[in-house]
Image (cartoon, rainbow, N blue to C red; front, side, top):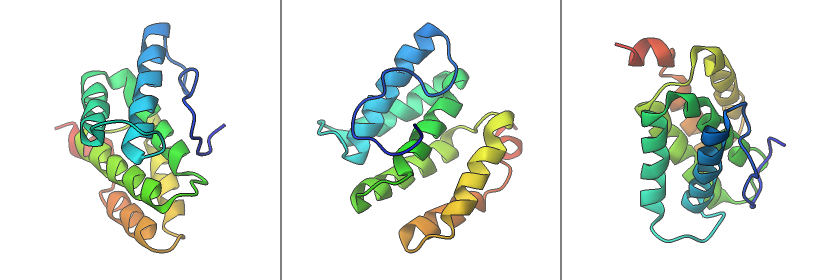
Length: 138
């Protein structure tokens, strides 16, 4: 369930109300398009859409992080992985995960440091920013 897939998720990966679950499916579509797993026009605007939804709706933030982590897990395409880490960095710089989810996200990044190449570097940079919530709730 939490491994890369090229098809759209039918519902949210986390427990959300019906309206937010529908938005979560739209976020996943944008994520697939931005990462190049689904052919869509204007991928930069898709990343902007993801960031805007997370910024405006705190209930969606953990869902967005879970979707990104899912798309980065067992992903067979280097370009897709690079785009996934780019959007992860953008999200971390734009909005924090919930306090309940923060340690899961940090653990995911810590595990990615064991990999080679750019993935290791992205994970190091993002993990190095430490406590997401303390630094962004000022």
